[in-house]
Length: 308
Image (cartoon, rainbow, N blue to C red):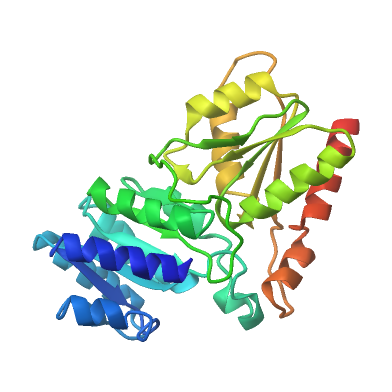
């Protein structure tokens, strides 16, 4: 996903001389093509993410279209106050790109986990939160984010993620995508969990359960029209994310659903990480197993809920 981001941003910068890239001391060689094609528009801000965010805000006030890029945990939680006051309060066209969302950097332990970022950023007024599911969707998300002209957070994985799409998809901020129709349950997934969600749906299918799958790439604004259709149609709805089960996609859907008095809506099962820190180190797949975010665990939870 990070290579797709770099390539797409290069294309966007060639087309728009206002686009500038600020990096938090990572990706220097990855952006060699950007630096060669767009001299004077790449800034290595060092390990100073709060300052980088404020610099980006100043650039936006000067008519530029800045994109900040570094490890997710550092480009969100470490500089949350600057995002809130310098970017969102002034409603500036700054695109914040976090690489290694969720448990992508699990081997580096809790300092590099990003399991609260969606919750924190979606609470900020004016902020849009986008979680692409693969490299193709990353390209579409960057195009839409820069076109929006307002604060946007784009949450990426790292590298080697399976693809969901076979080309750049039709992409509209705030409009989810129905990937599969179903009957017994509907998954609503976001970000790099989508391949696992599809695999869990396949596993349920082998046991005779037909699962629908929705790609909710935009967590804020939430596609409430699509949510309404799903909750009215299916007997069970399951949100899945590589993020805390509280506050992220599942929390957003739960808040929306709690405000409805419509009878007969499906119950919501939220699947995400537990309300706890992971005190051991391991690669991403190990961390997903630790938190129950594998196709086997997800399918088992859904099957149990359907039998209840």
